[in-house]
Length: 363
Image (tube, rainbow, N blue to C red; front, side):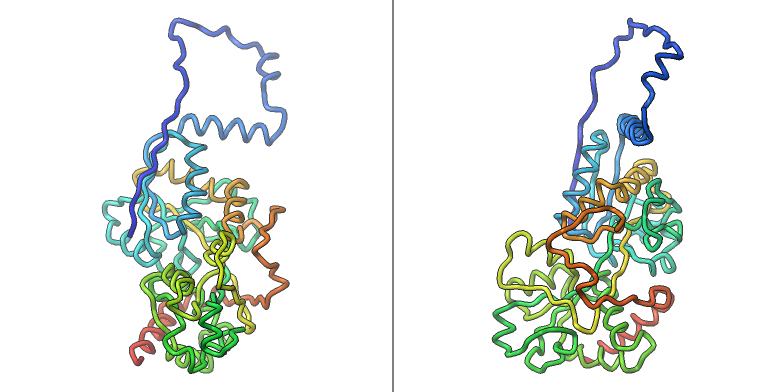
């Protein structure tokens, strides 16, 4: 778990108390009024920023790159809000929020939340639909009243070129991970604690018949024979890059980020069996101490400005209506994209994870 503090100082010259402004005439008021809806929104945002102050305590699961870019931009917009953060896995964040329910220490959980969490942990979060929600595509609208969706993540495989060659395998999909040459060389996070590992699990189950398919669970059983569970999702892609593992079951944004920064000797594989997409979101912690600032942060996450930042950081922004692209992200039409049974997976998440736990105990 990592904690930090970001502070911003802002403010202008105080008004001269001895000066009294002349009353505005109706004509002057109309002349100075914003000329368009966009100008009106900009004026409202500036007034909002000028009035915003106090604290914002963030619990987050996102990468350093995303955190610094997104929270940094929010801080520029609201310089008088003092921001502190705690960085941990999704499971750890939710456990902490649950433990602090009688006296919340955080204001928002930034990242790591999926639809299933609205069924399991809805009592931990405030109901809030941000002002930008109507801009979002239907599949990313806040229909539960709890989650503000900001990006879509696709699971992928992250392969170390040298170790793949040494093992004598060519990895094109999940079935290749059953090769005996990869025993102890397939890194994965813990789906009971990591949202990206849960994303991988639901993808594999979808590819091989569904969460209620014995064939799918037989495949999971065999896959576990070659698998190593890491301490956190970042250990998966970092371990592959550092040569500890041949292949990692991980998530697209982290890999794209590394490639865009010049990483060599590794490559992304989108499993030939198919990939699913899962919407990730954030939420306001129930009875938090800084509710107004938490709402401002939720609004910002779905703003056009922030959605563009997600794309720049190698993530697929939730608002696909925006005309922005990232050269490192292939179009969904160029990979074998599948729709998952999001509702069924969410409602049965506890049973799915319990079955995973029982299977893993046999290894």
